[in-house]
Structures are given as structure tokens and as C-alpha cells.
Amino acid sequence: MNKIKVYQLITSVNLGGAENVAFNIVQSNDARIEFTIVELYRSHNKYAISKRNELNQKGIQIKTLFPGPKKISLLFAPLMLFVFLVKDKPLVVHSHTDLPDFVLGLTLRLFGILRLKKPRIIRTIHNTKLWHTHNTIGKLTEAAFLNDHVIGVSLGALNAYKELRRNYRLLESSRLGIIYNGCDIPSNASLNFNFRRDKINIAFCGRFEYQKGVDILIKCIDSLKSNYSNKIDFYFIGDGSLRDDLFSLKNRQHNIFIHPPIENINNYLWAFDYVVMPSRFEGLGLISVEASYANVPVIATNVPGLNETLPHDWPLLYEPNDLSSLILLFERIVRQEFDLPLLKGSAFNFVTSRFEFKKMKDSYLQIYKQS
Image (cartoon, rainbow, N blue to C red):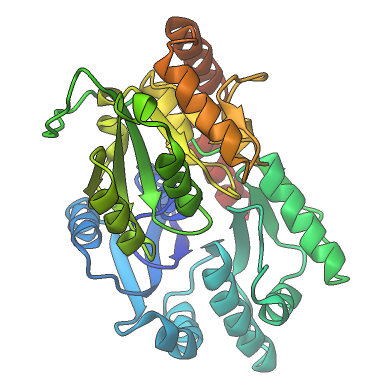
């Protein structure tokens, strides 16, 4: 029996929720499907190199459309993707997020011009804000896609796709669905941080970017009164454009610790007392799910997608950009006003019922086999 060839099209082998979904899918060990990860450009940080080696050791093929910088890759990637598709003839191309969609859209136009048979397309929508800074490019991209499979990682993400199509006056696909990102129960791996156990240890894990609300968290920490801030240590694990802002914060405050991205961070979350996610928008927010699996309460913004990762009436939700509410939550945490065993139990029960790892993989595999 011939295997179903599936391309997983991602921005780069690097840290990211969309990338993790692709990595998890290709490790599904289904003998009927042959996976290839296709990245637009190559990242060279420590995490990316480690993840690439891990995937190679598992026999997963990785193709890079352009070895150089990100911006230049967008010029060459559509042509290289066209060459790979013509040569390998995958039955399915599964695209993750906006830049892969952009490249794939241009490649599909080339197929149309040359009147070649196109592969079948699956798109996973990973965010609730789509093309909000590049509206014209977004419209050009969306116009290249017709009645393909479109999967939202949350109801919020799927609604964002529908709104985008309406705004561009394009018909939405008739093949829509929601597949929540799945997680395995993490292990309790050893984390070599010198925690001060008389402190409340709170972790931010992810990209240091505006979307993730890092700037809001910085303002919040600067605004905490000393009788509260003296009892909390904040750990920032990741990297991004606001890195220098965090180091400036570290110079002002005594309770800031900054670490580069940690591979398989879900296995280390158990060591923290809380995880904080001050995001302005999220397609889902996998760290929230992973933290709940690790029995670590999540402090999060009440935004579409992210609020789907937590039980109804979760007391640690606050409205985005509401600095005073976030400050109040930290103060209440220091005053021990929350029933931690109750919070941990309700969050764990919630995520195990909605974000089961096997369910996610099986759902995607079923779509591939229908193609």
C-alpha cells in the first residue's frame, strides 16, 4: 500500500505553539503516512539546533526552503516549495500560521498558471488576530485558498478565520472544524534553578513579544508594592524582541530571573507555583494547558482562545491591558486568598477532558486519510 505523503509547512524549526503541533503530529508513528517538515527558513539558536537533531534522530525528514534570513526567504520560498511539490508529489500540504499560508498561497497561484494538479490543502489557524498588521498581504493570501480543510485550534481561532473571510468578502470554506491542541501528562524533570523556597515562584514561558503582553507584565512588576514584590520571584523563560526591556527590569528589581528557551518546558513547569500568561491575543495558549496538566495554576488574560484552556469562572483570569487587576491578583496570591488544591484539581480535570494528546493526533490523521 502506498503511503500518504504529507508536508507539514511551518515558519521554522523553532520555539512556538504552531511548530509544536506540527512536531507532535509527525511523531504519530502511523505506518500509512509519510511526513516531511518543510520550514521557510532555518533558525540557528540553541533550541532550534537541539530540536532539529531530535527530529533527525527520529528519522523525520526536514526540508528548508531558504537557508538565509527570514525576510529574504519569503522571496525565494514560494519557488522552492513549488519545486519540492512537483518533485515529491505529496498528497497533502498542511500549513501552520500566516507566513506559511502566504508562501503556500503564492505557490498555489503558480500551480494554477501552469495548470498543474494541486495538492490537497489543510490549514490550521493558530491565532485570533490574523493579518492585523499586513491587511493587503493577508487579502492576497486568503484569495488563493478556496474550499480547503480549515481547522481552528480553538473556537476563537476559527471565528477569527470566519471574520477575516467576511472582511475580505471571500467565501469561507465549507470544511471547517476545531481540533484542540493535545498534551501528554508531563514528567517531573529536574530543573537546575536555585529557587528561593521562601518565595512564590511565578514563570512566564514563551516569546518576549508585544502579543504575549510582556510589556504589561513589566509595568505590573514595577508597580507592585515592596511588601508584595519581596515575596515573589519572577522567571522569564524564552527569547524575543523585548529581551532588553526585561534585562532593564532585572537591573531595577531584585526578583527577576531570565533564562533562554528550554526544550520540553512542559516537563519542568511542576517546579513553579504559578504560570502567568498576560497575552493580548492567543489562538489557544498551549503553555496554559501544559501548566494545568502539571498542577500549576495559570494567571491569564480573558481573551478568546486562551480562556478556552481554563475552567468556567476561573478566578485567575483578568481583562487584557487591565494593569490594576493583574496587580490585585498578585497581591491576593501573596495573601493566600485562593484555594490552591481546588484550583489545581479543577484545572487538571478540565484539560484532561478537552486536550487529550491522542485525540488531537487521531483527528488530524483522520483528515489526512480522507484527503
